[in-house]
Length: 207
Ligand SMILES: [Zn+2]
Image 1 (cartoon, rainbow, N blue to C red):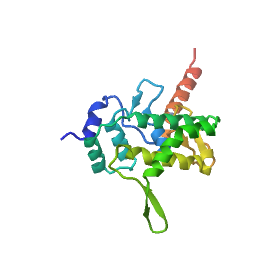
Image 2 (cartoon, rainbow, N blue to C red; image 1 turned 60 degrees about the vertical axis):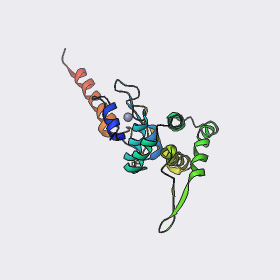
Image 3 (cartoon, helix red, strand yellow; image 1 turned 45 degrees about the horizontal axis):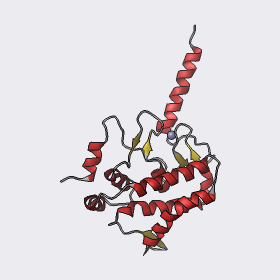
Image 4 (cartoon, protein in one colour; image 1 turned 90 degrees about the vertical axis):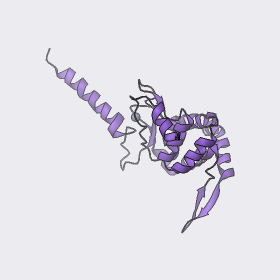
C-alpha cells in the first residue's frame, strides 16, 4: 500500500536531510519548513501533501493513522498551507526584525485564526480544557498552527522572538540571559563557529 511516509521518503532527494524541528513552538516550526531557504540545499518540506502530513505527525498534531486516512482521501490543494506559512513568515520575521505591523499582520492571519476557532472543540482535562480539532479534514493541520500563532502574538514571550543570525528562520530565545543567536547550535551555530575558525586560521597564516 502506498503510505504518505513512503511517498515523503521517495520524493526527497538523497542529499536533502530530514527537516530539523528547532523551535518547539508550533507556529514558528511551521514557518521554518523550508530548509536552507537561501542556500544550495533549499527544500520545501511541505511542498507536497504527503510532506505536510509527515510534518504534522512529527510535531504531534496528527496521529500517523489519521494522517494516512487524510492522505488517502486527499489530495486537496496546498494553497492554504502555503498561504498560512507565508503569513507566519512575514509576521514573525517582521516582528523579529523590529518591524511590528500589527494591522497588516492581523489582516493576513485573522481568516486562519477565525477558521481555527470555528472548528475547535473543547475537551475537559483535569484542571482545564484543551482545544482540539476534528482530524478528518484536510485543514486539520492548519487549525492548531493558526491558533498557536494567535497565542504567540499575544504572549509576553513574543519579546524573545528572534531571527537566526545564520539563516532566515525564526525562534524564541528562551535562554536565561537572552544570548541565543542561532536557530540551532548544531547547525547554524556550528557553521558560524567553523567559519570564524577558518577566517582566523587564514589571518594567522604566515605569508
Ligand atoms: Zn539558522
